[in-house]
Each structure stands twice: as C-alpha cells, then as structure tokens.
Image (cartoon, rainbow, N blue to C red; front, side, top):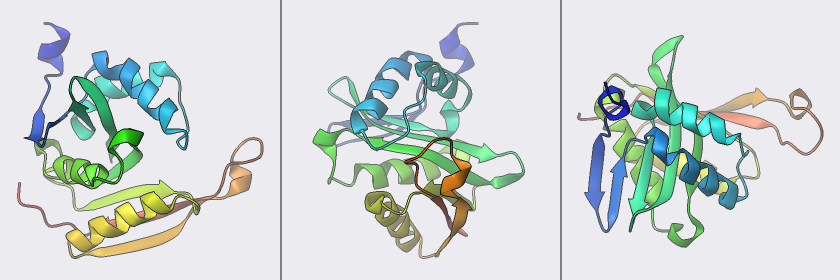
Length: 178
C-alpha cells in the first residue's frame, strides 16, 4: 500500500486561489520553512513536522496558493478528551496575513470529517501573541460560544530564559454542521 493510500489527502475547501487540505509527509519541508519564516512560533525539528503530517494529518490543515504552502495548522484530538481538538501551531505566510486565512483554516478543520465529534477547541497562547488571542476569540464569536482563558504553563516551567507563560484558551461547546 502506498503512502498516499495510507493517508490520502482530504480536500477541505477550494476558493479564492487557495486550496485547503490535509498535510502529507511531502509537505514536511515546506511546513518547517513556513514555521521558521513566521519568526514568532517555536521551531521544532524538521522531523517533527514529517511525523505530524504522517500521524496527525487528519486533524491538521495546510493551505496552498500557486503551489506553495502559505498556511498550516497542527491539531490533534486529545486522547483523554476525545471531544476536544488541541491546536498546537497556527502559521500564515507573511504575504497572506490580514486576509482571514487563519480563521478560514480553523473553520475548514472544524467542519472536516475527522473533527465531526469535536465540541471543544483548546490552544495555548502567550500573553504577547495578540493575533492568536484575537483569532481564538473571533472563533468563539463565530460559533456563538464561550472562550475561557486559564493559566496553563508558567515561565519557569520552560528551560532557559525568554519563553513566556502560556495561557489555555478553551472554546466551546461548538455546534458545527458537518
């Protein structure tokens, strides 16, 4: 069985010169570069993005424009809370920011088959990341639901200096038409 047969690409949406789909292993290099170029996200090893695409692709999304990846969301369904999608990273190419692409990626992901049983979305956000805070608050407004913010990780829990605390955003309950 080929890799494509094991993890087929799911087309989530096509509009406005954007193709929203699930990532595949071949996207790993471009995902790593997108995260690196964002400059504000924790850059993980290139290996981690290959693993992510292979094992968590169904609950993640990439966006292509003219054959290039311009957006990525990594997410997974929590093992201890199967009705909760945890969004780990949200990245949009600098040339495409301010066009609502991150919000559209979240909507496409939440309306996907893989997320059909999701009632809550969680994400950690640092206090200085105003764009992500606005994104998740907008998602709660779009779904006409709650957005609760609680402390998650303290600064001293991270190695070294310079990593801010992370606050947990919990959005839900979500009502989506699948």
